[in-house]
Image (tube, rainbow, N blue to C red; front, side, top):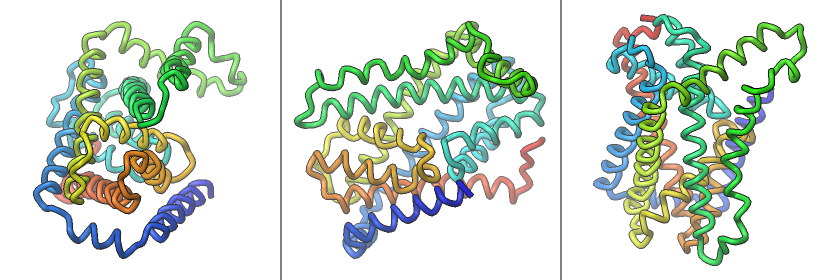
Length: 305
């Protein structure tokens, strides 16, 4: 019931946004897209996805028991499933279930994937904070508390490692407690015993965030809005994307778009242009995720093999 309400809320918000910002103007922008920049957008999304796959592969495959060619289609399927599940965790759950068939313990995959998610989230938070505090008319001194937000993400994880989680769970939930402990322990061990891979993940995650922002910049160019700097687009895209982590709507539908409109409108970009850009990216990402994943399944790809 809650999932249905989130879907309904997100879709309603999106429809209201389109209706408020003149559907005719938005449709005209979508029809008049520059195909060269659309092709560049597709290329950047694909490269960013390959980097994301290799990032996760680095941390999940610590024993080097899998080849990247085996891992990639399963990651792609998990990514596609994650796009239609709320809270940005559907991909982790799917990948963990799939990789269990490949001999990896589910807590190993969950914990290592969670490490990848935490790195991505903290870096996105950093980029997003930078984007917000550098907006015109915004004083950096007014936003100094944003600097402690990454600590708010890491601190609970470190606390739980030093103080047993039993304090937070009842004894009758022993199996749940053990599962959570094993998962969190695996997450911490990635950084503790594999700092090289964690560092490589952070570097490539930063590149991935830059590529995703560049894809949005290309869409703005495709919409004939060429007077926006790339360095402005990348952090604001990161800031607007963070809203998808909140379980307000289904996978951030509507909430991400309205956040993007609010942020980019401060730079003087027309609201219909911003909304059109976000709609184009959402459609392209869904297509680029599900078309390869669907073809792989139709061609006989088996997640459990």
